[in-house]
Image (cartoon, rainbow, N blue to C red; front, side, top):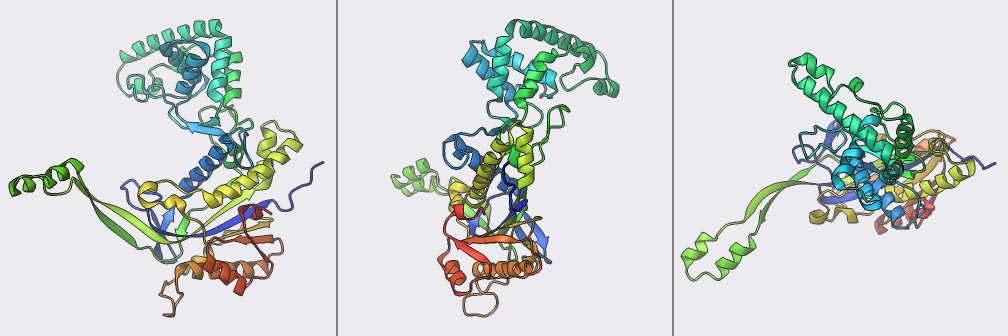
Length: 442
C-alpha cells in the first residue's frame, strides 16, 4: 500500500521582474491589463502561462530530459485528420487523397465536427482543438489499415450518403433547411454510422490514457459525449504587476537594406534623396514591472486522473511524483514566447519562488491589493518593487502561517543576489531556503 501524500495541495507563488516585454497581447496587439486595488495593473493571462508550462514539460519529456523523460504526453490540435492521414500514407502506403478522405470520415462519424468542405483551408480541420495523446493519429491509422476493406466499404457508403443529403439540402432554402443540416450539409440521421468496433477504437485512441500532461492540465471535449473529459489537477491564476501599470509605446523604424545600399553608393544628391526614409515604421507596446503569479497542484486529483487512465495504484503514485517535479520545474522556468526574439523575455528568472503544502489552496494575491509605490533607493517609500514585493509576500505568508496550522514544508528559491541577502539578513521562521528547483517540491 503506497503512502498517501502528506497534504493534498502544493501551492506555488512567484515574483519576477520583467523589463520592456510583451508576453501576451489582446486582439488589438496591446498589453492586457486588469484593475485591482483601485489601479490598473499589467496582466499575463493564466492561459498563456499554462500553455508555456505544458509545452515546456512536453518538450523536455520528448527530449528525454527531466522527471517525465520518455513518458507519454499529449498534443492539442485541430489537425488530427491530417495527422492520421499522414500515418496512413507514410506507414501503410495509402494514397494521400484517399487517406485524408478516410481519416476525416472516420473522425467525423465518431462525433467530431469539421470545417466546410468547400473551404480548403479548414475542410480537414476539426471545429475545436482536441487534446489527445501524441500517438493518437498513428493508433487510428493502424486500426484503419488493419480493417482497410471494411472501412473502405463503409467510407464509400458514408460519402455517397453525404453527397446525396447535401444535394437534397441545397434544393431547400431558408432558415429551416439550415437548422436541419450539419455544417457539411448532411443530416446525421441520413449517414451510415461508423460500426461500433471501429468507433470504439477511435474513442480509445483519443482517450487521455497515460498522457501525463492531460492528467495535469485536464481537457474538455463536448462534441463526443462518451469520450471522457478530465478535470485538471493544476489551478493557475493570472499574473499581475504588484505596482500600477505603466506602458511604453515604442516607435520603431525598420531599414530597407537595398535602399540604404543604393543611397550609400548614389552618384549625386538627387539619387540619395530618392532613397531617403525608413522601409517601414510603426509602434509596439511594451510593459515592465514586478509580477506576482500563483499556481496550485491538487495531488489527489492528479492521482485520480492517472488511476482513471488505467494505471495501477503503484504506477499512478510513481507517475504523480514525477509529474509534480516537472510541474514545479515548468512553473519556474517556462515563459510565454510572444516577442521573445525582440525582447529576450524567455531568459527571465524569478526573484523569488515560495512553495508550501496545505489542506487547501492558498492564493496570496491579497498581499498586493495595495499597490507598491516604487521609489528610488534611499528616497523613502517602498523602494524598488522587486525587493519590496518579496518582503511583503513573505510577511503575508508568515502572518497566515500563524493562523493556519495546515501550512507546512515552506521553502523558497531565489535567483537574485539582493533577495538572497535579504533572506539571509531577515529569515522567516519555518521557511527553508533552497538552492535548486528540485528542493521546492516537498
